Length: 141
Image (cartoon, rainbow, N blue to C red; front, side, top):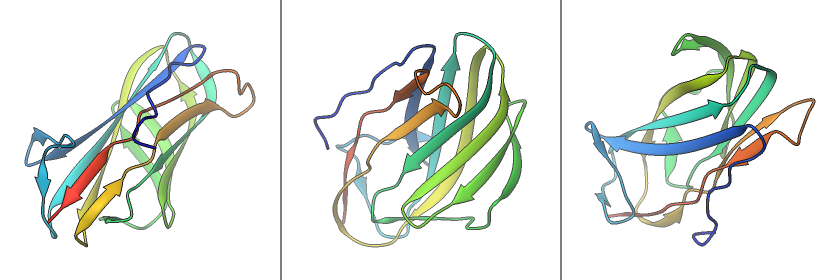
């Protein structure tokens, strides 16, 4: 999984960045049990699109701060957020051309070395419009 690189699809691109205390987390960052991370998903669309789905798979050591599903607003868009056991999913009715960001928080709950998996973005009714991030390896002490 750690060798998978990000892929820009036809019209959609997604990047995922983790932050701890306002600083970007990399695979070399030492994380500790109890750390709170902010997950920032940045989606770039080259045209207006409808019915966009985002799925962000979490590392096994990450638990969401807010586990309730519901409608949210972020960066001038509205979306429905669903927190699942191993992922966070976002459903956007209307995505305007340009760049939008969605953030949510997770806690680190156990030590070890983990893979974060990938985040994907895809049009629900035109699956040729899609993209995904690369995976990140994290070490928790």
